[in-house]
Image (cartoon, rainbow, N blue to C red; front, top):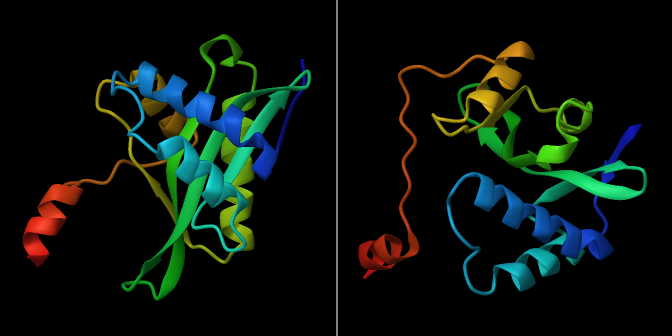
Amino acid sequence: MSVTVRRALPEDAEAVIALIEGLLEYEHIGPMAPGSHERIAAEMAAPEPRLTAFVAESDGAIVGYSIVYETYSTLWGQPRLFIEDIFVLPEHRSTGAGFALFRAVTRHALDRGCTQMHWEALTWNKLAIDFYERLGAKRDEGWYTYRLGEEGMRKLVS
């Protein structure tokens, strides 16, 4: 069973969205927000998309995906790549699909001139943490991740 990775095409949106739903189920987060399917599909087809999606295929089926986007480090004065999602269907783990996705994302980051990649992992997701650490990734110490939701954003600007 060989695994190939390629940039996702607009016609892959349905498969990518199904995998996003699989990730959310795996992470016990819940369903996607209303309208997310349509917005993600539209973004994947946009002339200047805000995200880049990759898919891993095995025997002609899409079995994993990653969504990334660039950020910018003012400290380094250079772009970085943020990995929003990386997910492989449970039955296709340990096939090299996750590694192939991560390599493709890393190649994309280097091709774009990025000097770092960043992502988050749930504290209980030992499988992912072990995978990242085997790749040589280091967990940031001394930083907290914060989030301000839409309600808080609207309150702030009103």
